[in-house]
Figure 1 (tube, one colour):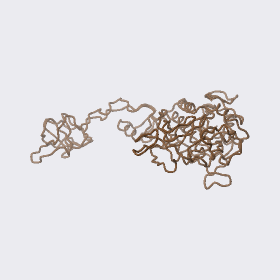
Figure 2 (cartoon, one colour):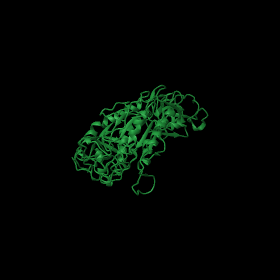
Figure 3 (cartoon, rainbow, N blue to C red):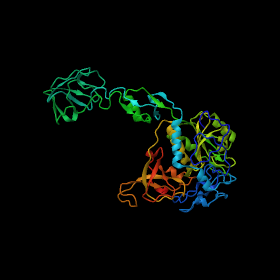
Figure 4 (cartoon, helix red, strand yellow):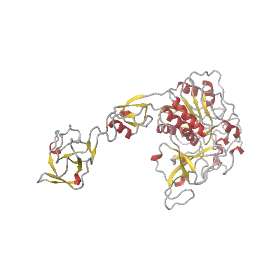
Length: 527
């Protein structure tokens, strides 16, 4: 719902192209958000994708411990059997729509990502002025323009001698308070050099007027008896002198708006004369963990399981550039969820679990009750089909509802939360890239699959179709069921596998994980 839109007559949106700003009404259990067990089947996953402990019940992937063979359509499984125990909360929903109905309602994966990306910049723009030492990790709200020439005067690029005219050169002591040390950095303008003279100079020191070049210490010889300096190599005019404005002139744009402030950007900003920067505030995120079955410590017991998402979601969101509050554990309490949503002053609320249509899946009913606008309600992706994106009324925060199974929740983070946070934080969408996949990857008949992978470069001894020596490729990982984290913990990205799957040697789009460059994983037992 957009600000100012009435919420008195909410209606449920069940379209393949969601209407931004439409209100959501609690769907019947046959409306495509059932907790039925076939909703997260991964047809023909890589070997080893069976088993695993799910996190929340909203993903309801009870069929994952016995994945179908390649080419098996999950539509053949009505999903209303009690399941085999791998989906926690089996039977939580009293009914389920056929898979084909859910597919009609679910938003295409790429369209869902595009909707999330467009929603972020639509929020009211905010800026803040921060001292330089507090801007790390923020995004520039305006272009960074040089406030001075860099360098702001001609400087020596090396320790050595600055000379004027042809050699040999008579050595002097230098001026400007430098004495026998020569011309030092940070001192006042030295006196001009006479033709045929030379003087010691330090790196970063100002070049005197009339100077021809700087000769490095190791490229010259001093005759102490005669007081003369001899060059041991040809001297080229201007050598080892950094002229004023070599890097930039005052007013030049150094970086565009939207640039992430890294340590290098801090250094450039300081060099360019800045004490403060105008940045976009990092988006503020509240994390609400739903489910009565969750433990925060110890081993699973008596039907209770460990909360895997509470410890994971906050650091993941911080890596995406957000300010994240400590996770709040609400259990299966509709009133607590409503209160948390209506009192949040965050830019984004993340919920884990409760997005299906079981008796204690409260996300949809609560969103309908408070008049939220539903932008995305289910995505044609495996794992993670029951994810959703909403906007709370009266210009309130966005809400991304993640499925409860761990890898399905990761799918929701990368599908909806990541592009939304980029927009809210003033960052441009990430440019997609494609890499050859080493192995055949089975696909869902109708939906996109997101499969954990690691990047590799094939050695000269390597063999295999579609990739030659020294060619980068990705390797699909085992343990890629929706209830599993073992595969994603070893991954540096997710491969976007189109419906029907891909053959070995095919290029696939890759979604990088935010810490991919710092993950020196080996294939080991995960591939």
